[in-house]
Length: 229
Image 1: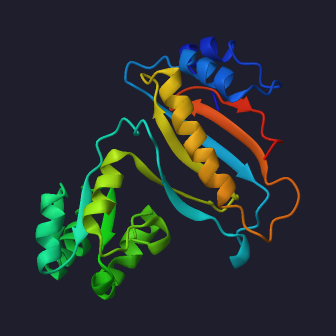
Image 2: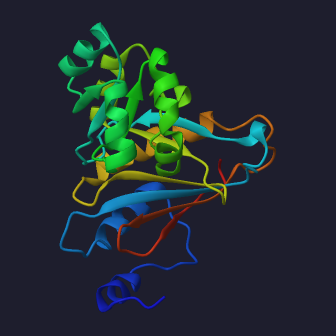
């Protein structure tokens, strides 16, 4: 893959053979942000899990203390009083079965997170083939299937992110924006890593995390010391 001049310039700042302390990696990755927009800083965590086994799966959610720097649009599937509760809590879209044709037939996907009350999952399940591949399907482990829709919305708006293994057993999550202070990014990093370490499956033996890499949307990866996990 050929990279542009800007990438090549910032890539000179990064020694790919060196593993850095988290604070040093955060300071360096901020310097690699060269795009005209406020780039997202992403964290890529390679684990020793084998996601093909149910007892080595990882999926959950964590609220980043400094937020994500992104405005998140929340769709809530509910009925009765829970619809009013969701609206009052700041949901962007609320509704029930009447929303299905809009998503199924019109391709409407102008939302980032879907929350559903348990009694709506039979309805929402019909959208599995559309929402599933996009990572939008509500899930109890992620706290998006709940009767406490107000808390779910509040947490999501405050910076709650989901994490899960991909097919390569890597977790990819946003850590914040390049415009964040180093302290804000460090706060988010510590909260994220605490959640990932706590989520370690009992079936995984030996070193749990193989590598941890930070990178801006358009920049090179900066590697963090991971052998302590």
